[in-house]
Image 1 (cartoon, chains in turn brown, cyan):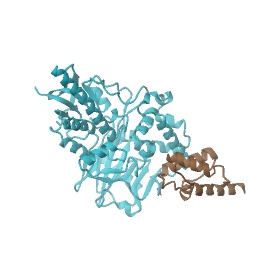
Image 2 (cartoon, rainbow over the protein chains, first blue to last red):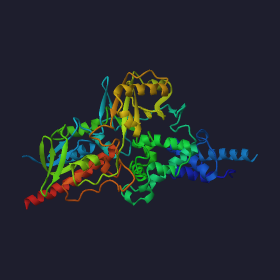
Image 3 (cartoon, each protein chain N blue to C red):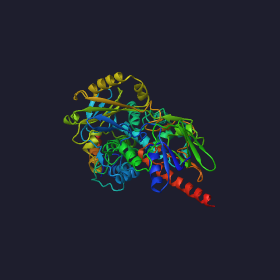
Image 4 (cartoon, each protein chain N blue to C red):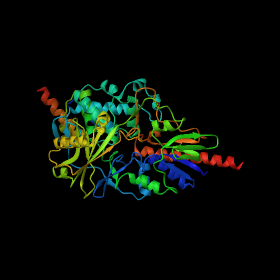
Amino acid sequence: MSDNPAGLDRLIEIFADVLETDGVLPDSNFFTLGGDSLLATRVIGRLRQRYEVDLTFAEFTQAPTPRALDELLDSFADSASR
Amino acid sequence: MTVHDVVVVGAGLAGLTAAYDLTARGADVLVLEARGRVGGRVRGVPLGRGLVADGGAAYLGERHTAVRELLDRFGLATVSADEEGESVFSLPDRSRSPFRIPPYDAAALGSLFEALHELAGAVDPQRPHAAGRELHELTAGQWIRRRVEDPGALAFAPLYLGQLIAADPDDLSALCLGFYLRSGGGLRFLNAFRSGAQEFRVAGGAQRIAESLAGALDRPPVLDSPVMRVEATATGVSAVTEHGVHRASVAVVALPPPLAAGVCATATATAGAVRGRVVKTHLLFDRPVWREHGLSGWSLNDRGPLMYTVDSSNADGPGVLTGLVTGQRAGEFAVLPAPRQESAVRRQLAAVFPELPPPVAIVVTDWVTSRYSSGCYATLWGPGRWGGPPRPAEPASRVVRCGSETSAEFYGFMEGAVRSGHRAAEQVWTVLAQSLQEDRR
């Protein structure tokens, strides 16, 4: 279970919407599915707008799958609650 | 006096495609061209050492199917335009990045791209007039500023769009921008090199498509023959040049909208027409030195004159960087005397790419003051009543329009020009068949 406001299912949805594909799995790599830097900023923009999550571009490139991103956002939520 | 089946006015890709299709069907076609060369906004520029660069339209992608079909037909090869390496941003501080987005707040850039994506989605290219009023009334810049607040994203917007449309965001209506983005295949396709609209170039230059089409005609295009008027009667048309009058059954007017309106009365109104403005610069080096420094050659900067550079070297050849100036800056750059253009480019290059030696040669291709283009990349439209590309002519009309700006698909692109040429040829063929039947009665 995710500890961040977005969560794995929402992250998969955002990836799918921005990449315009149904084939996003928890371990799908954003850039392998045809994502580029422009589309990545749209994911980052939505995370801030909808969930007030602040993610840098470099952080996103280090966690380019829904699962890795979910874990990264969990760690943000942990450090914020401490 | 000879009466041709068809007179084609304009030997750009659209007019040549129409002429080629009609010739293949057995029609007697005369092509008249104002310039001393064929190709229009597709132009080969010699850089020396046997190299020819694309002084005009250059890039193609997978979805440009009509152009790709011509490449196959004429056996023209392509070269990949996708380059590895880091980008350089100079906004105004210089930075390097493995990515093609600038070092501004990523979420704010994301909201700019979300807005542009939404704008493209709000316009149906077949029915742009049906879009909401706000899109007709606002400039693209006003529309963006209503949705995006971040100063970095707002500073980036004109640079990003300048490269896409060769105009400033306040030059054109939000409707026209949304139309252009959607017609061109959407933001994602337009933005990308790999799998996008900048995937490859034509080996030897895109003008080879025009030359191949022209070479396959029964009669070579007549150059240096600006057409002043196209007149239609019940039985035929005449195209009037300084040198004489050419008669035909049907005319194809393959010119950008403002020039078309100047020669034929039936062309749609061009109030609100705005010229896209671009100057293209080619910088020649002994080899692509930037690659040795881990750079792709792609750069973006806000100091000008060159707002963008991109690697357009051929494999194993000398290094070529293409630099673009667009919009108002292109207007200012175009009127500078040549030595001042060159010194400005050299000064800027040394600041953006301190790793590089000075270029061996600088070749400037100016589309701003070019008389017979009337907007490059394309004619765009300011706020007002623009309702989209002209409707196809009435079925029986003897004057048929074509040109990239008559195409709802890939408006402003080579692909739009070629598609419009095919469509025009179909239409002309129908009219020719009808008049043949009438003659026999």
